[in-house]
Length: 411
Image 1: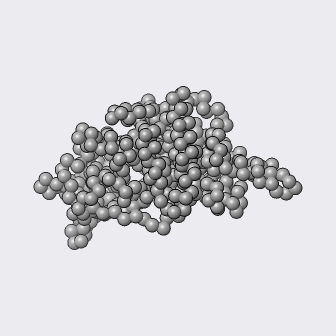
Image 2: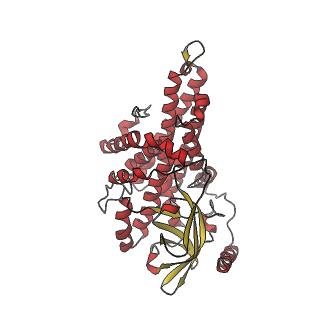
Image 3: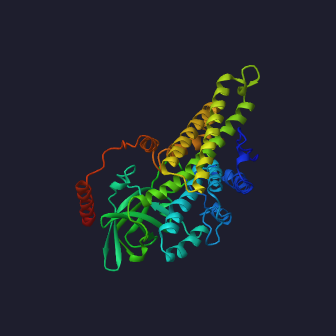
């Protein structure tokens, strides 16, 4: 399999440091040599490629921006380039790394106690332990503040009741970062695999992210030690800050998928001969599609590069990340659809990566904030006026929480 040549129409590589380019090349080689030869089979069989984890850990791909615990302490542009190359391999693989780094290691490292960090960060970084992030619920996705999972203090324990849905790595995780309503606020809890009252079940029959484990989590009088609360969490902004970390990685990752399908479409169009012995790359309609794709990829590259520089300077805002996630996933999905069209019937075969990326990106467009929700976040930043559905009143929210508690008590 030929190595990936990269996509650099506007000489953007000149804007990266030597270290950033070295990180990208290392991950690019890993994807070419070890991911792409097996990922179509994993997707077909609906299995996560666990055999890749030791090498990914050895390369420092879990928690790479952390500088303690022997981790590399990379800048955020290098981290983005890692996500880009992993998603060029598969969105499910990037999702795993994104969850492990941005949604599990980040909250433990940022909001956890020293004991929690010492216990979990080294093992998560080494791939010895797997984590998941429990925020989304069966009835609450875009409105996480409406969650019904709750925790109550009982003696020397916290007792959790509720359910989470669409959780990446849920059934294979050794520790779940679970968000629950508690004493009038929202707090994060560490729930370890095997804790009585904690069970997980996989979402089956997915046509998207098939090489990724997606689960439901259930908590029925799940009793955890008092020390398992993330001590610095107190409100919805804490899980949302974790989502900002993950969305940042997605903005870069989606470009990797876009680059992958673009490169496939270019090479296919130059080799596919039709109509009088000419390659279809010579046809105006095909060239129009390729021109659109490379233009949007280039704009997306500049967008995430500026996001990364702002993040390293401490100036990146959540609404900036919303623009990156919304825009780059959208153009990646359009690139995949155009590439599928250029490949014709071959575009639906997993002999080529296009249909797999296209199906995966349908999920990526929805998770970590839907396309429409990110548009509302951007518009609120521009106008100063929020346009979401009116939030529940404090009274209605309290009643909903009490109903959820009563229902859970009956089970």
